[in-house]
Image (cartoon, rainbow, N blue to C red; front, side, top):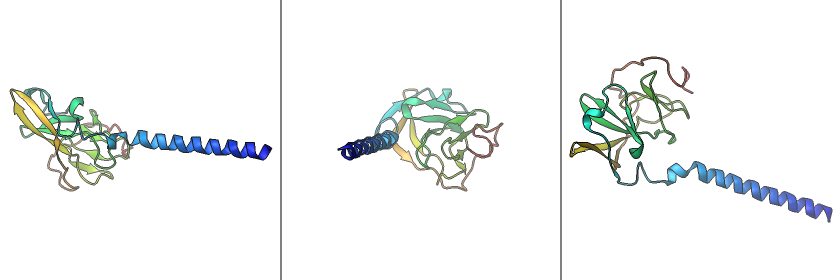
Length: 166
């Protein structure tokens, strides 16, 4: 009788452990299961074009991305890393995007600099309607492959991730 109770106890423990692993897996893949950006095909009204900085970026949570400028044109970047989907924050001290998960680094307009990412950051289509920038999160343009960096802006200071990128 004693071995049955021990066996039953171990079976219950393994079932609970398996359930916890399954729950953790579902929790960590939630971003993958959700719709792209602010929703599949969502058009997000943001700010007036003159509010977008030429140096640095403006985070827009509703579109899950950033706005910046290049040569007078507004660029809307998706904050999802093309490597494994982590949110890529802007590092004020270095003046570049630095992914905390695996160390990919991108310049201010999302072009690949280094790390395991297969390409630069993806971008959204942008239009001006009634004096506001409207970002179409359903229209995603994949980032350029490594080696196509066109923006010649050196880092402005120390990296947020450190010199090893994470």
